[in-house]
Length: 175
Image (cartoon, rainbow, N blue to C red; front, side, top):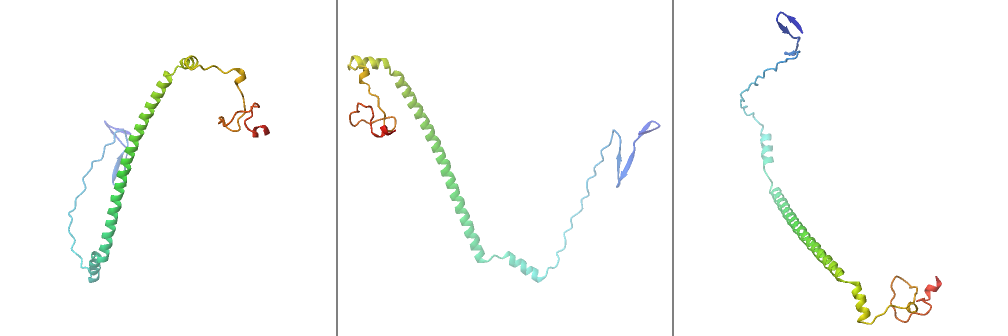
Protein backbone atom coordinates (compact mmCIF):
# COMPACT_ATOMS: atom_id res chain seq x y z
CA UNK A 1 0.00 0.00 0.00
CA UNK A 2 1.40 3.32 -1.00
CA UNK A 3 0.38 6.57 0.67
CA UNK A 4 0.17 9.66 -1.51
CA UNK A 5 -1.19 12.69 0.22
CA UNK A 6 -4.12 11.87 2.40
CA UNK A 7 -5.79 8.98 0.55
CA UNK A 8 -4.23 5.52 0.48
CA UNK A 9 -4.01 3.76 -2.86
CA UNK A 10 -4.17 0.04 -3.40
CA UNK A 11 -2.40 -2.14 -5.89
CA UNK A 12 -4.70 -2.85 -8.77
CA UNK A 13 -4.44 -5.57 -11.36
CA UNK A 14 -6.63 -5.94 -14.41
CA UNK A 15 -7.67 -9.42 -15.64
CA UNK A 16 -9.74 -9.70 -18.78
CA UNK A 17 -11.57 -6.46 -18.26
CA UNK A 18 -12.16 -6.80 -14.50
CA UNK A 19 -10.24 -4.93 -11.87
CA UNK A 20 -9.16 -6.68 -8.66
CA UNK A 21 -8.30 -4.53 -5.70
CA UNK A 22 -5.97 -5.96 -3.07
CA UNK A 23 -6.25 -4.66 0.44
CA UNK A 24 -8.37 -5.02 3.54
CA UNK A 25 -11.49 -3.39 2.08
CA UNK A 26 -12.43 -4.90 -1.21
CA UNK A 27 -15.64 -3.58 -2.70
CA UNK A 28 -18.19 -5.96 -4.11
CA UNK A 29 -18.76 -5.57 -7.83
CA UNK A 30 -22.11 -4.21 -8.91
CA UNK A 31 -24.29 -6.71 -10.61
CA UNK A 32 -25.88 -5.56 -13.82
CA UNK A 33 -28.94 -7.50 -14.95
CA UNK A 34 -28.48 -9.37 -18.19
CA UNK A 35 -30.14 -8.03 -21.27
CA UNK A 36 -33.28 -9.66 -22.42
CA UNK A 37 -33.55 -10.16 -26.04
CA UNK A 38 -36.84 -10.48 -27.78
CA UNK A 39 -37.59 -13.91 -29.03
CA UNK A 40 -38.52 -13.70 -32.63
CA UNK A 41 -40.50 -16.67 -33.89
CA UNK A 42 -38.72 -18.47 -36.63
CA UNK A 43 -40.32 -18.81 -39.96
CA UNK A 44 -41.30 -22.38 -40.63
CA UNK A 45 -38.83 -24.03 -42.88
CA UNK A 46 -40.06 -25.93 -45.84
CA UNK A 47 -40.02 -29.61 -45.11
CA UNK A 48 -39.73 -32.18 -47.81
CA UNK A 49 -42.63 -34.40 -48.66
CA UNK A 50 -40.78 -37.52 -47.43
CA UNK A 51 -40.18 -35.99 -43.98
CA UNK A 52 -43.86 -35.06 -43.66
CA UNK A 53 -44.87 -38.58 -44.65
CA UNK A 54 -42.46 -40.12 -42.10
CA UNK A 55 -43.88 -37.89 -39.35
CA UNK A 56 -47.43 -38.94 -40.20
CA UNK A 57 -46.47 -42.61 -40.10
CA UNK A 58 -44.75 -42.15 -36.75
CA UNK A 59 -47.89 -40.59 -35.29
CA UNK A 60 -50.17 -43.35 -36.68
CA UNK A 61 -50.74 -46.41 -34.50
CA UNK A 62 -51.39 -49.77 -36.01
CA UNK A 63 -54.47 -51.69 -34.77
CA UNK A 64 -52.37 -54.63 -33.56
CA UNK A 65 -50.15 -52.22 -31.62
CA UNK A 66 -53.20 -50.70 -29.94
CA UNK A 67 -54.46 -54.17 -29.00
CA UNK A 68 -51.02 -55.08 -27.63
CA UNK A 69 -50.89 -51.91 -25.50
CA UNK A 70 -54.42 -52.54 -24.22
CA UNK A 71 -53.61 -56.13 -23.24
CA UNK A 72 -50.39 -54.99 -21.54
CA UNK A 73 -52.28 -52.30 -19.59
CA UNK A 74 -54.94 -54.79 -18.48
CA UNK A 75 -52.28 -57.29 -17.36
CA UNK A 76 -50.46 -54.55 -15.45
CA UNK A 77 -53.73 -53.54 -13.80
CA UNK A 78 -54.51 -57.14 -12.78
CA UNK A 79 -51.01 -57.60 -11.35
CA UNK A 80 -51.30 -54.36 -9.36
CA UNK A 81 -54.72 -55.28 -7.95
CA UNK A 82 -53.43 -58.76 -7.02
CA UNK A 83 -50.41 -57.23 -5.32
CA UNK A 84 -52.59 -54.86 -3.31
CA UNK A 85 -54.87 -57.71 -2.23
CA UNK A 86 -51.91 -59.84 -1.13
CA UNK A 87 -50.44 -56.90 0.73
CA UNK A 88 -53.76 -56.28 2.48
CA UNK A 89 -54.01 -59.97 3.47
CA UNK A 90 -50.46 -59.89 4.79
CA UNK A 91 -51.16 -56.84 6.96
CA UNK A 92 -54.40 -58.37 8.24
CA UNK A 93 -52.69 -61.65 9.10
CA UNK A 94 -49.81 -59.92 10.85
CA UNK A 95 -52.34 -58.03 12.99
CA UNK A 96 -54.10 -61.32 13.74
CA UNK A 97 -50.78 -62.94 14.69
CA UNK A 98 -49.99 -60.04 17.00
CA UNK A 99 -53.40 -60.39 18.67
CA UNK A 100 -52.93 -64.16 19.11
CA UNK A 101 -49.42 -63.68 20.53
CA UNK A 102 -50.77 -61.16 23.02
CA UNK A 103 -53.56 -63.59 23.99
CA UNK A 104 -51.02 -66.43 24.38
CA UNK A 105 -48.82 -64.29 26.61
CA UNK A 106 -51.83 -63.40 28.77
CA UNK A 107 -52.83 -67.07 29.11
CA UNK A 108 -49.25 -68.10 29.98
CA UNK A 109 -49.14 -65.42 32.65
CA UNK A 110 -52.50 -66.60 34.05
CA UNK A 111 -51.29 -70.24 34.06
CA UNK A 112 -48.03 -69.33 35.80
CA UNK A 113 -49.94 -67.34 38.42
CA UNK A 114 -52.31 -70.24 39.08
CA UNK A 115 -49.41 -72.73 39.24
CA UNK A 116 -47.56 -70.54 41.73
CA UNK A 117 -50.73 -70.22 43.83
CA UNK A 118 -51.22 -74.00 43.76
CA UNK A 119 -47.58 -74.62 44.71
CA UNK A 120 -47.80 -72.10 47.54
CA UNK A 121 -51.00 -73.68 48.88
CA UNK A 122 -49.40 -77.13 49.24
CA UNK A 123 -47.89 -77.67 52.68
CA UNK A 124 -45.70 -80.80 52.64
CA UNK A 125 -45.76 -81.11 56.40
CA UNK A 126 -49.56 -81.33 56.32
CA UNK A 127 -49.38 -83.96 53.57
CA UNK A 128 -46.91 -86.07 55.62
CA UNK A 129 -48.99 -85.73 58.77
CA UNK A 130 -52.23 -86.66 56.98
CA UNK A 131 -50.58 -89.67 55.25
CA UNK A 132 -49.25 -91.05 58.54
CA UNK A 133 -52.23 -90.31 60.78
CA UNK A 134 -55.24 -90.73 58.49
CA UNK A 135 -54.04 -93.30 55.96
CA UNK A 136 -51.68 -95.24 58.23
CA UNK A 137 -48.61 -94.94 56.02
CA UNK A 138 -45.15 -95.57 57.45
CA UNK A 139 -41.59 -94.81 56.41
CA UNK A 140 -39.78 -97.70 54.68
CA UNK A 141 -37.40 -99.78 56.84
CA UNK A 142 -33.84 -100.48 55.72
CA UNK A 143 -34.58 -104.13 54.84
CA UNK A 144 -37.52 -103.04 52.64
CA UNK A 145 -35.39 -100.88 50.31
CA UNK A 146 -34.00 -102.73 47.27
CA UNK A 147 -31.43 -100.95 45.06
CA UNK A 148 -31.18 -102.17 41.50
CA UNK A 149 -29.78 -101.14 38.13
CA UNK A 150 -32.11 -100.20 35.32
CA UNK A 151 -31.60 -101.61 31.83
CA UNK A 152 -32.18 -98.21 30.25
CA UNK A 153 -33.11 -94.69 31.29
CA UNK A 154 -34.07 -93.26 34.64
CA UNK A 155 -37.45 -94.93 35.01
CA UNK A 156 -38.55 -98.56 35.15
CA UNK A 157 -41.95 -100.10 34.55
CA UNK A 158 -42.41 -103.03 36.87
CA UNK A 159 -44.15 -105.97 35.18
CA UNK A 160 -42.98 -108.60 37.72
CA UNK A 161 -41.20 -108.78 41.06
CA UNK A 162 -37.68 -107.41 41.24
CA UNK A 163 -35.15 -110.24 41.86
CA UNK A 164 -33.23 -110.32 45.17
CA UNK A 165 -29.95 -109.76 43.29
CA UNK A 166 -31.09 -106.21 42.42
CA UNK A 167 -30.41 -106.63 38.69
CA UNK A 168 -33.51 -106.07 36.57
CA UNK A 169 -32.22 -107.71 33.37
CA UNK A 170 -29.44 -110.03 32.28
CA UNK A 171 -27.97 -107.41 29.94
CA UNK A 172 -26.72 -105.35 32.92
CA UNK A 173 -24.55 -108.26 34.21
CA UNK A 174 -22.50 -108.18 30.99
CA UNK A 175 -21.41 -104.59 31.56
